[in-house]
Length: 179
Image (cartoon, rainbow, N blue to C red; front, side, top):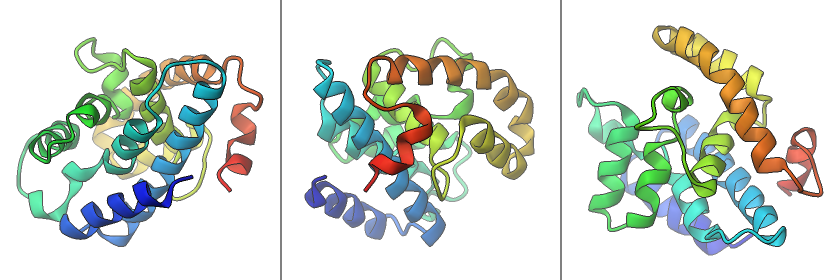
């Protein structure tokens, strides 16, 4: 894995005053996405590993304390910040990452790259989790989204099957590939 991309992400974490928990989560999601994108690339898919990785590292930039008080959803804020930063290739990947995004055709991940970032966030909390574990963890922190999270879980599992199809490792082996 390129430490340069992680260093770039760290510069955004500092500039946008990420709290420690958000930094740790974002680093894990970025690492998961890079592993999955690299594996999909090795399997013959045309994916931009660096763009997917950077979008995954920065998917929650809209949660920055610098944006506190803005009533828009964090994924919309993330998309706006990434666009303003000139990271056009990351905008849709971040905008389509929330657990409940799959329930709305306007925000559901459409491309393989968008699905990889979505899945990376579904599997990465502070550690690699199953989709069910991560869904329960997010629902506990955000009870107002509990029903949407529950409804999105089967769709997230389908995306996971799609992303892992044909890879030399399965979802239960993901943590071992993070190095």
